[in-house]
Amino acid sequence: MKPVIAVLWILSIALAVGLTRLADSDGGGSDPSPSFDEAFDAIDPLQRSYLISRSLQDLSADRLPELLEALEVHRMGIENEEVRLVMIAWARFDPLGAYEWAREGPKNWRPTLTDQAVFAWAYHDGPGALRMLEGIEDPELKLRLRSAVVDGWMRSDDKEGATEFIANFPDLKRRGRLFFLLAAEIVMD
Image (cartoon, rainbow, N blue to C red; front, side, top):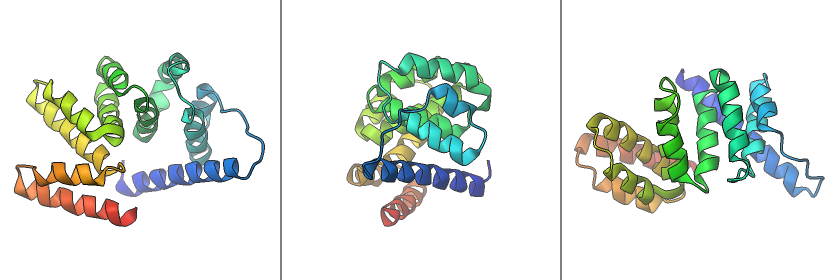
């Protein structure tokens, strides 16, 4: 995916979430969340982002089977950014479960699911995601997932924890690049 498209996608998601919160805060009626099937069936990218974000707002363990069924049915049309939204919503209440499900997911989709599950875990709990990495023995997988941890942690509210982690990064060149990215995240907040 081209960087411009990814940025536009993220901006459309942010706009959809912002509009949802604005609509909810005006005291107007609270429409029920759309079903996961309705959200993943939407064709228009902006409407789809809105519906997916809205359907995930009240995701809980009770609604998880419905979500997993919709993911299986719509798997071929789901974008990486949508997987990230799903994992961020799931990781709010069960990051380990999201990660384990991702690791057992369909083989060709497993790397995307796993990367996004780890990103979401770190977004909600950077130190917890790091502790999970300690149990991974495959060096290539561990390196890839460490990158997802750093990405998720830098985008979280825990900038202090992310800064401390990056400060102890052994590779000086990578540390400098990560500090640059973290500074950009802080400035954009």
